[in-house]
Amino acid sequence: MILIISDVHGQFQVVNEQIDFAERRLNKEVSSVIVLGDFGLFEVNLRRFFVRDKKRFKRPLYFIEGNHEDFGAFEGLMKKYGEFFTHFARGTLQKLDGHAFLCLGGARYMDLMNTPMHSEISDADIERCLSHPPGSAKIILSHDCPSGIGVPNTPGLEFYGPPGIVRSAEIIHRYEPRLWVFGHHHKWFAVKEGGTFFQGLAESWKGFGVLESDSTFTAFDNSVELVHEPFWRRWFASF
Image (cartoon, rainbow, N blue to C red):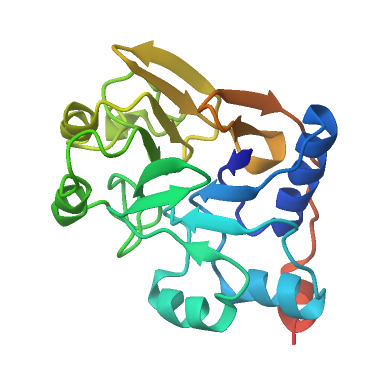
């Protein structure tokens, strides 16, 4: 079974705690983990976990990018830490444990703070998504939600208008997916429209989803206590 989680924000120890919980709860082993964006790809987070604390993820981990990663240093960080996890690039079709996933990281533009350079989903990203044979991806994984499915905007951000990926309807029309899972909005959400079940995940420390070999998807609530360190300690103690 694959554990699908979102919005880790550099709290990498949460991933291992949710793996442990899922395996105890379901009495079976997690084969791999997929993070749906806001992984927390920043040097200070990576160095603290992998170098200072000498920790590792308990299962192979894959991620799509969100809108809160270090895009300016993305390639360099992947070269430096890429032995510990794998990036699924935008618009790629990825096969894992018998499933075919269409991956779309990034988010719809809001402002420079919430959508820094290179995090915005572009028309070129959508075209890459649409470049695969019709019906070849039955599961879509994205950071932001599809537009028009009823996801409410975050309180205080309503002036940005309805959230969601522009042109997501084209992706749905081409692939007719049975499942679309996303994060970004930090809330649980579930609805079925047509033949597609749309599942939004809360933050990683509030729960996760499990994808079984028969494509059954189940969401689980499980609160995990976060580790809070002063920024100066996280930064200086990592060297």
